[in-house]
Length: 345
Ligand code: GTP
Ligand code: NA
Ligand code: MG
Image (cartoon, rainbow, N blue to C red; front, side, top):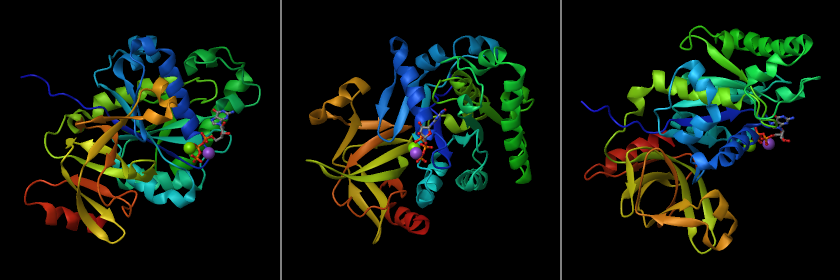
């Protein structure tokens, strides 16, 4: 029997305000653009897709070392805000996640919204790893831009390696107090029992190859079932409602399962309860290069398949609640789906 097609894992990035979530994604995107000849990245609404070829190019020799190839089609990253006001988006982001990256500032350790994020991940049983960011700020650190962390560590003096260990063990201690076992990724023996801590710098790119390689490795080893493409009606979440010049109100959504087509009816939550509307258009952003031309930022598509970030045009989106689940309405199921949404929003 043919193995079933795997969809790209949805990787949600969580963490306290200013831990460096967006910077880390910018760095990953920037690195991906540098190796564009290998496939670059495709743009998604509210998400960044890093294709398999690009992951291979960035992770390079690590794949040989860890002995695996990239068999998922890529990784779809979703950024979330760290500000305390955006708890709802973190929860929704957390529920969309196949796997998560909790970004922690190495100079600060766990902070209030790191704890909040950890509770979301625990309650939704989302596997995650820690990106221990800003290692370049450890005093005396000599940066090796873009290099794997283990390469960089080899050339740091012992006192700096000790400083890194202190930052790691502070987080190990804080996590153990709330019931998580964790270790630096190069000391993890069993990735199903210990949370891997990957020291990184969004500023220098150090550790990014390992971060991506471990995400791919974990997804491929432990989530095949979940990633097998589910046929059938689409299911997703709305992450943002946005008024666009000339388009009116639009919903930026992440499609988690199935397919979404122009003309589909979707059920979603609004401030006055669940409602059903019909998709008038689906829009994808232009590639990074072309995004600079504001007249022509989107490309209409007829359909999208999970996992994907997409902009939805439909009547009546102005009062949609960001964070609402969204379901394509199969015949006869409108009421059931509306009830499900009312209980969740
Ligand atoms: P919110 O979205 O507001 O929750 O913040 P964030 O987690 O996305 O953090 P952001 O990427 O906005 O970074 C916050 C600040 O930290 C910025 O000034 C970044 O330049 C800085 N920063 C992020 N990563 C690093 C890093 O690896 N090293 C250093 N030195 N600074 C960093
Ligand atoms: Na910030
Ligand atoms: Mg941010």
